[in-house]
Amino acid sequence: MGLAHQVNAGILSRMVGSAHPTRLITFDQGSNFVKVEQQQVGTVDVLTPGGALVDEDAEGFTDLLHQRIQSPNPRVVVAMQDVAYMDSVALEGLLAASEELSDRAAALKLVNVTPACREILELTGLAARFRFFNDVQDAVRSFL
Image (tube, rainbow, N blue to C red):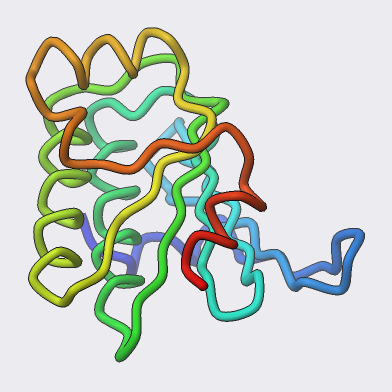
């Protein structure tokens, strides 16, 4: 599933709190919608998926993540506080993004990973491939 499916549900632009533009991106999956909030904090993209990353939701999020890391100097943070669970598609997408960023001397940073998702990363042996933070601002500052 490509990003071409996202616009049917619409992209909403708004300003949130500190003059950082936020876009709410929704991917139309038939009767379901995958929601990902995208915020630019300085030069850092902060992606916040809303809900479990499974099946088509995981594919839509993975497509968006891949798009964001294609920028010339990618700095990406994924805030996962609303992700109760993720499947192998989401894991593969996160891992592929992490590896591509690593090849470019960058890192994918995960924030507020829920206990279930952290356990999935630990049990699969993938946790060591990511940097974890408890706060979005700490993750953003880590790029300095």
